[in-house]
Amino acid sequence: MSSADRPSLNVAVLYPDLLNLYGDRGNARTLEQRCAARSIEANVIGVGIGDDWSSEEADIVLVGGGQDREQRRVQADLQQRGEDLRKYVDNDGVVLAVCGGFQLFGHHYRGWDGEIMEGIGVFDAVATHPGPRIARCVGNVIALWEGETVVGFENHGGRTYLNEGQQALADVVSGFGNNGGDGLEGAKVKNAYGTYLHGAVLPKNPRLADRLISLAMVRRYGPEEANLAPLDDSAALRAHAEALHAALSAGESSLGRRFA
Ligand code: GLN
Image 1 (cartoon, rainbow, N blue to C red):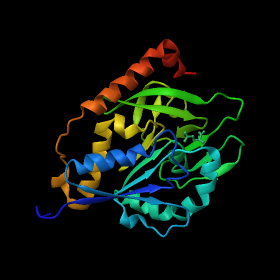
Image 2 (cartoon, rainbow, N blue to C red):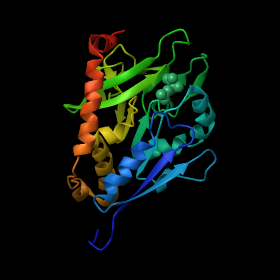
Image 3 (spheres, helix red, strand yellow):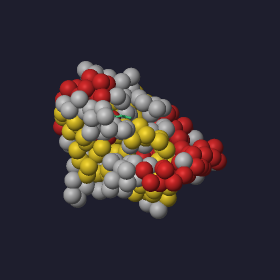
Image 4 (cartoon, protein in one colour):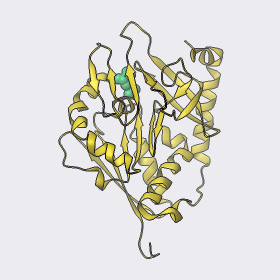
């Protein structure tokens, strides 16, 4: 890339009006800001049901969480995009899929009413809601990702189980993560990241945000773009510390919940 060209990244947010729980749209905003601070243009677009869009136009795909009802509404449209999105991931496309979006990027999600919603099988995982009588997984989460803490807020009835060989994204330190039993949080396939963390997750976890940007820059412009200029992260790190504090001050009950 010549120095005269301003690099740019296309960020596609799938179903922004339907899958956007607990501030998930903040993920796009964070990517936009962290790109702008480095003179990378981030073009954020929303992709709704029936929109004419292909992942060839994308450098980063975001999908957020939603209630079962909203997941059901997007399911058929997402199915139609399944082959395209699987190819995109195979081709090192960058994805962040959160909670309800994460569930639909697995093989399927069996919702609270017992009905199956087919997923697109990016992640080798299935999600099952044990029914309305069983408590949801709610609270602040701390997980260990590549030796560092990632923090976020979770609120899900569904429990995700990774099939053998499917890598998790992180290990739960406090909170439930995928299912409250196996200590795993999220999933990772190539450059596709799935997680239960809302919050939104990227504003509080700048290293994770930069990982997505760096992967997208390398894919689009080549390996020399892997290292991003450091930014002043003091505000983001304060938010991170506060989320750590909130999770830890929930005390033993929070730590014990992991095995609930
Ligand atoms: N409806 C899904 C569940 O309850 C996902 C919720 C979410 O995205 N926070 O598990």
